[in-house]
Length: 333
Ligand code: PEP
Ligand code: MN
Image 1 (cartoon, rainbow, N blue to C red):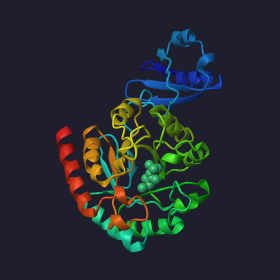
Image 2 (cartoon, protein in one colour):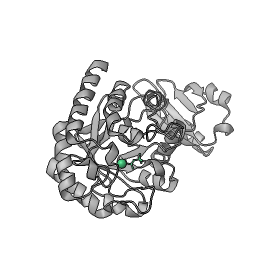
Image 3 (cartoon, rainbow, N blue to C red):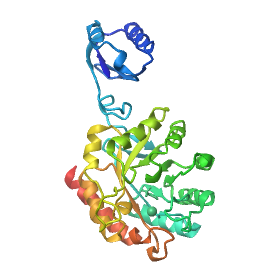
């Protein structure tokens, strides 16, 4: 439920109302605009007598919000959230290009790829250190050592880094990581989300393989309700009956999410398609439909990659993708 206060409401009046609402065991989120103040009421609002609330002198309107996500909801927070990572901004018209290998494999590999993607225009480096693999026999990532190598690549290039966490027990290893990724398979690991909500790091939250957009936003809500509002959503393809691609890239998620939420939306065409040849056209499409960032897997030698070589671009292919995306953005903006 949201209550819009009349302009001219004094702080004392507002505090009085907030105390009254809190006494009904509701959380009250205050959003202060230039003209009006909006109170977002979270909890069991069924106890509230809407007519009584509306009748109060300081209250302009009261609305029931049917969506169960509150903090991620654009209704409470009409302005786009801009996530800032050093000089890099994502959201609210700021576009980022995230690129790097599926997995960190060696110092030479990650530094070479980092330098190449930076030269083509990437402004964030990705690389998996903890890898959620379908098979326990597949390469599981370099773990803590992988994060150390990412930090070396960051030092060599100045690019901020994003890497995936699978278990909160490893959080200490992420102290110098710029963005923590929650992979598709952990989108509903609620204990992990709650703990990440207590950190002050931006979280890149990937959509689960079979999750709705509302479920994605409820997972964002888990992070935000613990105090961390820096959430970046990622569409990475969903499981459908189609087998021609690894997943089905749901690009309509981008404009839909932009209406549902103020959080930035990233598109990952690499995991969505699973095929290197489809990555550039889908990246162009993502740019055309308003993605706030695009995340691309790039490997210096895809045929020898320890993970996801089939969908990885060479640095040269990535360079031409960047030019295409740039051209598309100039047309649609
Ligand atoms: C990844 O980005 O490395 C990854 C494992 O992706 P997803 O969780 O989307 O499968
Ligand atoms: Mn991958």
